[in-house]
Image 1 (spheres, one colour):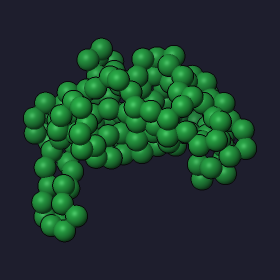
Image 2 (tube, helix red, strand yellow; image 1 turned 45 degrees about the horizontal axis):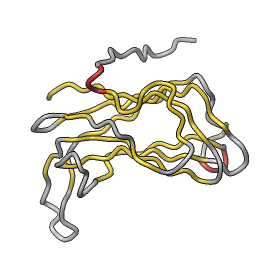
Image 3 (tube, rainbow, N blue to C red; image 1 turned 90 degrees about the vertical axis):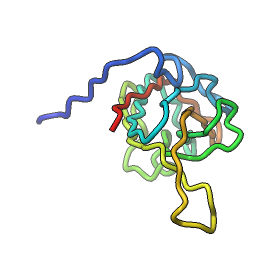
Amino acid sequence: MAHQNMQFLQDSAMVLQAAGTTNTTNGSGSLVVDLGSGYQEVDVIFDVSAVAVGTGEVITYNIQGASDTAFTTAYRLGTVQFGDTASIGQPVDTCPGTRHIVHVNNVVHPSATVASQQETVRYMRINWVRGSTGSVTAGIFATYQRR
């Protein structure tokens, strides 16, 4: 069976969470990626090295974008979940030693009433919400190509 090549060059400036970091409580990563100005398409790579998966356990990772490094207004650019099969809507639990890729762009809609209003955000980070008592150990980084 053929498998896709999921190799990416890792740039230290594009790290969102250091390899081997375990998320056991809700929070946001302290590492922020500067995408620069203009439209960007980004692959966020999750290298999952360990997962504590019991019934109902889940961690949701939100890829957030903002116009400032303080994330005063944080927009959700993408989401991925790891954990127990019933919680993540998959036929099997998340397996350790796997790579998951989420493709996003940095376009946000800052108005709830004007559908045509859109802008790009410059900064990106990872935020996670833990359901139950699960934990995920992962290295998370981003790679992008200016379009």
